[in-house]
Length: 86
Image 1 (cartoon, one colour):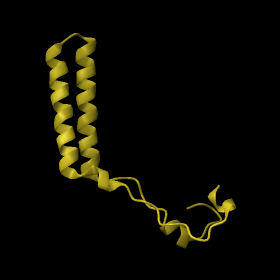
Image 2 (tube, helix red, strand yellow):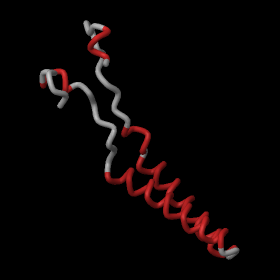
Image 3 (spheres, one colour):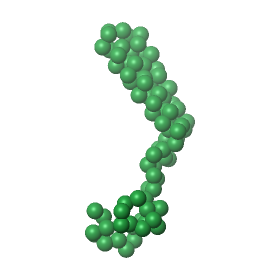
């Protein structure tokens, strides 16, 4: 909590952390990118395509888990002064 702010205001700030299932989908995509990148470095096309396949699986997981619904939009800040936005 920000020092000098009341806890009522802090409750409405929202959270952009995401769910564990969303992080799993993103992690699978990152692993696929790393494997494909390593395959490009060592000129092993099998690894490139395996990494691309893992990345696609991560994308499918992202669609199934609907990761875009993790974003929490802050509540409207009614009555705040310009000094409160710093």
